[in-house]
Length: 298
Length: 333
Image 1: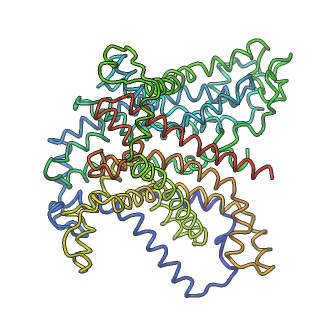
Image 2 (image 1 turned 45 degrees about the vertical axis):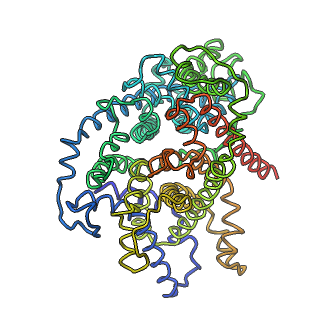
C-alpha cells in the first residue's frame, strides 16, 4: 500500500532534528527498551480494534469461538454482505449522497471563502464567528427541527433530503478550511492578472482555482467523510425506507433480535472503513493543519 | 465567542469599507485585483457569500430558532402534522428540572463523561506526541501510520467493533479473562453504568487521541531546537524542559485541541446510542443527547426533546465561552 508512505515523508520534512526531546546524545539501553515497550503498547492499543474487525470478518467461525487469527479463513461474510445482505445498494446510496454533498458544499464553500479571505466588508468578522459557532451546535439539537423541515419539503426517506442536510453540516468547516488556503495564495498573482486585464471570472478560474486545488481536495474529502459516516440524520430521516439506507445505518440490518451475525457486521464494517482510511491517509496533513489554521500564526 | 482561532488577527476592526475608496487594490493591497471598481467591490463579497449564507440561514440558524420555539410547546405528532402551535410556556423546562434522573443520571453522564474524555484524550494524545517526537524516523513512520488507521475508523463501525470485543457471550475480552482465570462466568459489561461508560471512554479516546497527537506533534516539531539546547546547557531536566519551554510555546495549540475535543466529546451520540441498552432501554446510561433523541423520536414528545436539546446547546456554548475567555485572557497577559 503505497499510501502508507505518505505520513512519514510529511513529518520528516518539517522535523528540525532527528529526536527533538531526547537528552542530547545519551542513549542508555534501558531508555531504549522502555521506549520500545511504550511503542509496542501503543501499537497494540491503536491497531487492535482494526485488527479484530478484519480478523472476525475473515473467519467462518466468528461469533462461535474467538481466536486471534482466522480459525477458518473465508470470504463468505463479504459475499453474503454484498449479495443477500443488500450492502451493494447501501454502498451506492452512500456514494451518491457523499458525492452530492461534496460537489455542492465545496462549490459553496469556495465562493464564500474567497469572499472572507479576499474582501474586507462590513460584518466580515461576524460572519466568520457565525461560521465557527454553528459548528458547535450539537446535531441532536438540529435533528428535531430539520426533521420537521425536511418533512414539510416532502423529502423524508429520500437521498435528496439527506444531501440537503449534509451540505449544511459540511459547509461551515469547509469555509473555515478553504479560507486558509485562499488566504495563502499571494494576492500579487491576482493583482498581476488584473493589471494584465484579466476579467474577474478569469482571475478566479485561471489564477486562484489551480492554486487552491489542494485545499479543495482536502475540503472535498472532509465533506465525503462527513456524509459517509453520518448516523443520526440518516437514521432519523430515512426511517423505514430500507432501499435508501446508507452504509452507516445499513449495518444495523445484520443485528438480529436474539443473536447478531458478527462475521457479517465486521465484514460490512471493513467495507465502510476502508475508503475512509484511504482518504485519511491522503488528507491527513491538511486535516490537522486545516483544523488549527490561524492558531499558530497567520 | 470565537473558537479555535481568533478569526481575523490581521484585520483591523474599524475598516468597515476598506475596499470602497477610489482605485483598485488600494485597500491596503489586500483586496487586490478582486476589488475592481468601488461599487462593484461592495457587492461582490455578498454575491459570493449569498449561496452559503442562504444554506446556513435556512438549514442551521432557522432550525436553531425553531428548536427554541418547539421547546416552549407541547409539540407532538398532531402539531407536526397540522403545523399549529401549542404553546405551554416554560412547562417543558420545569418538567426537565423536576426530573430526578436529570441530576442523578443524565447530567453526570454528560458532564462527567465529557470532562473525563477531554482530559483522557488530551493527556494521552500529548503523551503519544512526546513519544513520537523522541522516536527515530522508522518507528515514527510506523506508529503514525497506525494512529492514522485508528483516526480513520468511523464512529459507527468503531462502536460496533468495541461492542463486539466486549460482547457478553462471544466477546474476546470475556474469553481472555476467563482463560486467564480472572473471571468465572461471562459478564455483561453493558448493563452496569460504570463499565458501560468505561467502554464508551475507551472508544472515544481511541477515536479522539490521534487528532491531539498529530496536532501536538506538529507543534512540538516547531519548537526551536536552540531553546531546548540552551535550557539543557543550563541543566534543565527533560520534565522541566517540557513544562517550562514546550508547553508555553504550545499554549495556542493546546487551546485549540482542548476546545475541539470538548465540542466533540459533549456531542457523543452514536457511541452511546449504538451500545446495547444505549438507545434508551437502560435509563441509567442516558446522556443529554440520547435523552433528547429518545423523548423526541421514541415518545413523539418533540417539544420536551427540544427543551433538552436547548439545554445541551447552552451548556456547550457556556463551556466554550469560558474556554475562549480564558485563552484570550492568557494571551493579553
